[in-house]
Length: 429
Ligand code: FHN
Image 1 (cartoon, protein in one colour):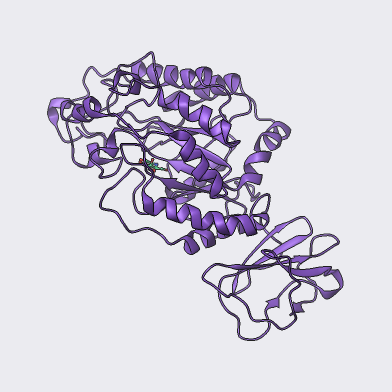
Image 2 (image 1 turned 180 degrees about the vertical axis):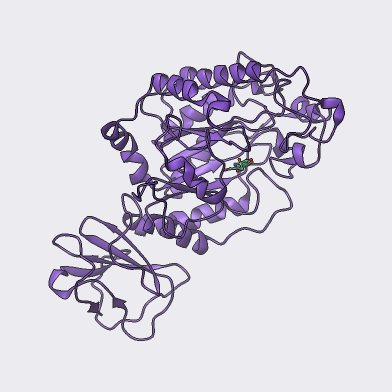
């Protein structure tokens, strides 16, 4: 029986809180219809009609090493790939189903290749695993608000044995935790209505996972969904509340605290366009400068950002996504010091940008021009050891107005001594 140990938890979380930035990858059969990963549910596609995608699936360009390299060059330190999404299709050689990649034309264990590639690039390995399953006959169909057959009385739930489904789901998670080496992140998705916590036999599941993968970091979705900052309820110490909270398509205004008011680990999961899974018509991509500022915002509030890509069915990350990753990577190469291992500062958010901090160093991210000198409010002259442009190391001249481009300029104030206390005098450049 897993019992929470604060020291072990802090040790386990060290790399994750240092990493701050990861890649989410949603990829599977739904990349063929190319209308997002919920296409089967949204269009109420019967199983037999969806099987045509299974018959066709053959990712001729699949190269997980290229994915891992793209993540690394963007400054990301971990990757999380969907081993199984809600449609129930397994990207790995599961012994509990025939609905798997090794039974398609490609005949490949895509997760095996993925974990090897991510490790080879020196990144941490994350596996996303759905707890919802639209393929399994014992998962609720008719009337379940997520299921493709929710409105079809022919799919009544009489005779569906949910316990059978749970045993299946637990067995598959055991496979993932047993057959693919060290898993660094296990990203469950997601609880809803009465299906949360013990409805999934969550304590038993977490005990099994933690016994097989003692250092794995787990999200909070055996109990929650992604709404409402990943549901603050997750911050109560329960055996299955997981290691971090997972706000989805949002950044919590003040970070996330537990029920006692202590800051806790959280990770905002965000799409580049408006879909997790590949959508051929969705060209509404967030620009790189905006995504960089969102990464800074997450870190300034003590959180991580996991940014999603949805490869096409052949295995290619969309060109628009690659361009954004490369632009982010250029900025991270020069300014990553203000992200990695950084977090909240005691210095209040300035009106021209955001502040991240690590030890004695404070990083002022300038999101907009100032008229006249940049006020580094909260930085006392007598503690200030030096002020430098992070990207070049150049000393910052006094009374400078900044922000030469769309990208944030970073000034780091080296305080030399202890971190700044909020009631200090101000420094104005
Ligand atoms: O239903 C899923 C969705 O497809 C996607 O995987 C996101 C990613 O966090 N999680 C669920 C929606 O909250």
